[in-house]
Image 1 (spheres, rainbow, N blue to C red):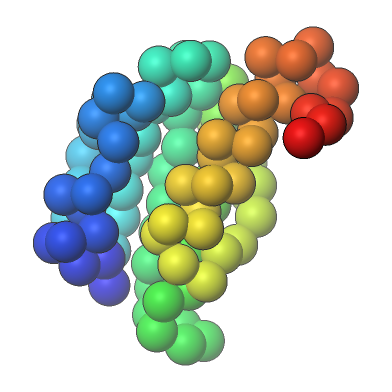
Image 2 (cartoon, rainbow, N blue to C red):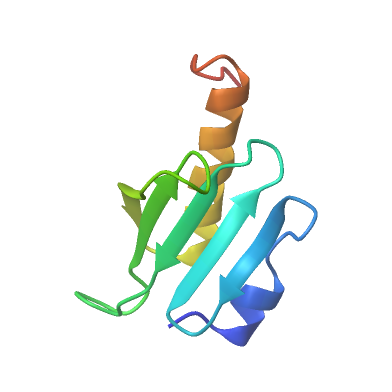
Amino acid sequence: MFSERELKGLDRGYFNIIMANDYDLTLMSKNTGHYWYLHNPEYPEEGTVIIFHRHNGQLPYHLHSKSSTLSRAVKQIKAHDAFQLNGRRPVRR
């Protein structure tokens, strides 16, 4: 379950929040225009976040990855955006 604190902590400068509730969150990256659907089924354990992704509003979602927390899922999304904006080449830090 996403907490109210986690949801309020989302970076609204980075994301358009399309929909948010206790178990589901839909975001659009302002950088890439990609859509992200995050689902928290609380199974197999509390805190599990399943991340789905699509490149625009017309295409279907596909499974991107899983994460243990919402904040880690957001880090994965931002890393994916950096990869996309870098011409789909790995970003060296």
